[in-house]
Image (cartoon, rainbow, N blue to C red):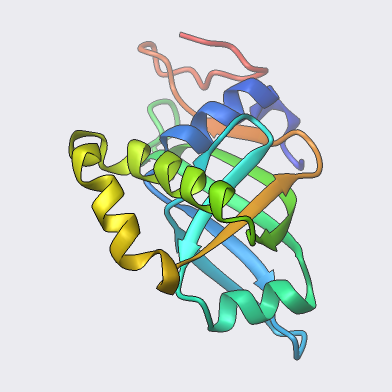
Length: 171
């Protein structure tokens, strides 16, 4: 990390990943070209993350060829004018993690992963979950991403006095 003064601990980075409305997953296509796509991920624990997709397409082709992926999440991204120097800048909270992706083939894990995703994004509609799975499980793929190292976090944030909060300082 170039600006170590903005680095935040792994637990903080995981919280950013849990709160981000989507996480960009960067993959490598079979031809070696880059492919990044924002997806709605949910985690079973701090190490295993899931997303769902169609049972064919760029994501699955890329994962089959190159299963190593990079996850990037950003929250609280706010354009601002630096309170001390008037510079145009952004305040943000971000996390990055590396992992290995694979298609979930076990039906029980697939349903459990879909339940985890649904609880995160549609918690008030879980009464319809079983019927939705019954209708669409056969045409839904689920991908498991297992983190290969702890995520790293970074932020740029100013306190009430206009000082940048560096070295992990909290409010």
